[in-house]
Length: 455
Image 1 (tube, rainbow, N blue to C red):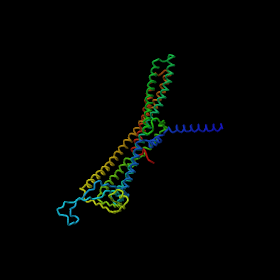
Image 2 (spheres, one colour):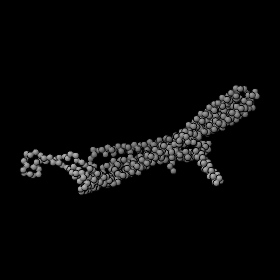
Image 3 (cartoon, rainbow, N blue to C red):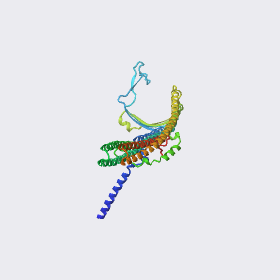
Image 4 (cartoon, rainbow, N blue to C red):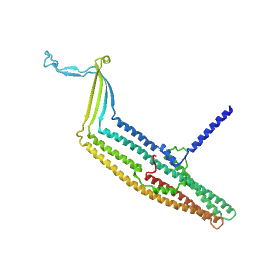
């Protein structure tokens, strides 16, 4: 019994540990996983998805107009005061009635009346309806493309926020290394000061350097927290949820990135904005056809069937026989003259279609400009990064040499501090250049329509 309890307890503890490990693993996100999470949880995307669902309901509404329309009606009337009809006194041909006798008032109707009926209406032909059915499919396409556009926007925002958080973390790591290195220098300088080899002023200079580094480290820490908050917001993640980044920005293969960028070309069809305009052009054309269809006749049929009864006593209304009736009708509505209303509507729709075509041309020019700018920016970013990497290596070597000279007594404390400051500045410039390169890559991918794909 005790062994069974021990086994069950161990299994429960193991399940808790596995659950904890799994939950901890889920906190870490690569860039692709962060984008995928945002696609599923971002509220802007959810709103566009709701718009797509609403579009499906709108399509169903359009189709429903062509289905049979059935209605039923029940009516019960109590004529509180029966209306009277005035007739000539001799209306019934009684020769005894004087010709100058005043008219007689005769009740026209009965006290109680009831009727029940149903009607079936069916649209047979309507040009506007059939055009509407074609427009419904295009309307669905437009709603789906709006959702894709929202996903592209979110993917761009998440990617940039992800890179920002990565760079901030790398800067923090370098500052920690700098603080550790200057701390070691402080210990050595204090020992040399105690031995009388250096002045107290040298110690104070290094202490100022450490204080500046720690202040900057705190600023970077605040920047990290802000970057993570922004990333959570873009991902649609609750602020209190833990988040870690699994990708390392230092692992980016710059040679492969440079090659892939140079091989890519421009395709307007890859841009969701251009695809949206194509769909809007279809809708504008269908709008024009819909107005023209208004010149065609509309044909519908209706079938009605009902019962009615009327009695002076309410009880007799339901105990006596009800009489049935039925009617079948064919309705043809032929437009003849509408005061040129449709003509002016057609003129407006033509203008709307021309505007869409102009927007397509303008978007092409805009895509060309964006792509050229992104290409120039990324070339500049590569060149700047290469320069900053070289500066970083040189600054690191200067720090190493200046420390050796200082320890051997042939260099000054100021030289070491200046070298450390230059090294820190080179580190900051390098990661700024790396961040600019990654952002330029995102902008170029977006300009070419390659940033996000549903596939």
